[in-house]
Length: 308
Ligand SMILES: Nc1ncnc2c1ncn2[C@@H]1O[C@H](COP(=O)(O)OP(=O)(O)OP(=O)(O)O)[C@@H](O)[C@H]1O
Ligand SMILES: [Mg+2]
Image: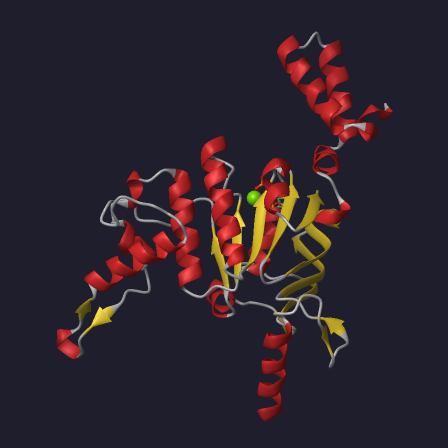
């Protein structure tokens, strides 16, 4: 019991230091670590041999096209599905979550794209949904509305989110603002790892910028962020590490210092595939505007794409 506690204390201290080694296992301790993770659905291999790490105050981006396995990966980390190969380690301890509650208890919060909010309820109600504050005891117990409103207001302000009124129904907020409220909520309820599933996918340029700023806010608060996206232009400015998935397989895992935005875009799109598409469209007498776009994209990827 005592030894266990000492070990845990040691590990939670160690995770605050990037790249520290756990003397018991002689391996680097990360806030969260995936080693050779694999997942089958029947005979469909959804994920194969995926390795990545998440640390405090760092953003790990998971990039990939439709069907690449991004959602499968986060479902494993969030406790919705279980992996059947490899190991998932949280603060040096191997885990296999049996439910989302299990993952949440380990400090892993997930903000899904289709946020589970009640549109007609005020912002503060949504902020505390499922974790309402109460005041008084027994038959005199009631919701502590004032306190919840005040906390919501302060927490949002602390994250630099300026909302007119926390009494406003959350359904009146833009998609970007709703994402931001969800991020502030996870931070307030003590998440250590924050998973964001394509938070910018349905947003325009300006709104995406706002959400990216809150990703950095969460990072600066010391959370380890996992940012799922298919847009390298969103991932690159905020990311520290980039995992690229394609048809369930990792096709690259890079530290920012080892890859440029152009290279990341090239790996993502498959420069050669884009060039091929341009040829195909040309042969089909494709629309010139689309062709010009594809050619521009191909040119911006550089070297590799011109191989063919
Ligand atoms: N519950 C399931 N049962 C069977 N196959 C599944 C299941 N969930 C996902 N798959 C398959 O696993 C593969 C990876 O899917 P996944 O949803 O993880 O991809 P994704 O990267 O999130 O794609 P998208 O960008 O479209 O959301 C796909 O081939 C998909 O059809
Ligand atoms: Mg998905």
